[in-house]
Length: 213
Image (cartoon, rainbow, N blue to C red):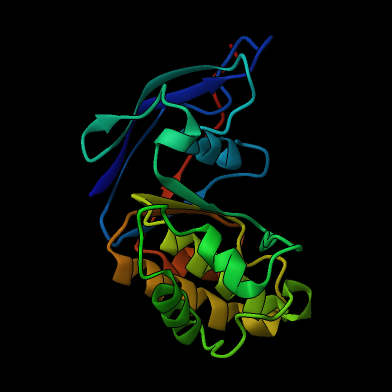
């Protein structure tokens, strides 16, 4: 499994130039690439392009493919690409276990066993019935990651996933997250302003502003 972008670009509605210069990248299974570039260059926009979450009426071009299949014009729900955001976005009206179950594909039968295994991997045994609001920031981050991986995505996008955490938690959650992504053998792309995140990734992917002339 590999995630490939070839001369990929975005032009917002009413704009005359791309947000960033056309991007070429290749992330192989089990690799984590960190997108770098100046503030406002469009790093999160690149993730939205790959994940299929751009606003309506954007012009897109180039190619974004998973395992050789071009996903550029597919709706997000048909790309099988998971996303982790800056805040661990758990459903507040669902328990921890129900949040994890939400990520499971409908055809999975051994749901309870999968949820229990995920809780064990996250160090949260016995917490299936807990309210997400009762969890610490690090615990919520681990639940959000396990839910994303339970969905069996073909790739994972991470948008500043550790920046909302207390500094003393970041190393632990980064290591936990990266270890599980690599063990899942899926390509991942992270946006971060933290040099430690870039150093822990397998490689960096710089992007630069699009031509305005």
